[in-house]
Image 1 (cartoon, rainbow, N blue to C red):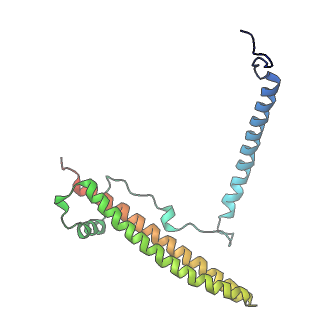
Image 2: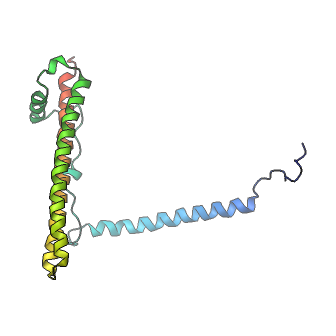
Image 3: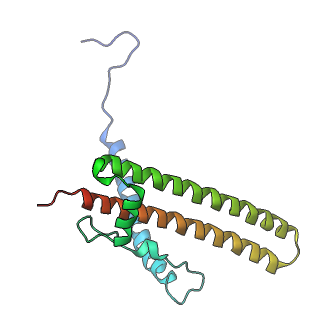
Length: 177
């Protein structure tokens, strides 16, 4: 077939373009790998006890979630029975939805409470910015961090409780062999 008038026939990209591009990409990937492998030990050392600026992980981030076939906490079983009084009359899916909905209500309440506390703390922080005392500014900033951390812990606890309650419901609804 002849090419249309004024058009060139399609050509393949020559190897002299592809090979340097591929070499550049691979060199960049290798350099990135070296960079991150060398910076990883420094990051580990920065989180050590000798560094007072290091942020410690909260208990909820270091806890491994329980397996579904693990024994369920009696408090979670009691919470399921309180949340779903007619447990025998509903399906597993309906019960899970009810528990998730209840958790979402708790989540929303905790979020609204934290937001209100954060707004108050932000106002104090803004006022402290106008204050000449560095100690007052640092205290206001620290209060903001504390409120945020408390809110995060509360939301994580709600999520853990919800997970435990759903696991308890699944165990209760599981057919016995």
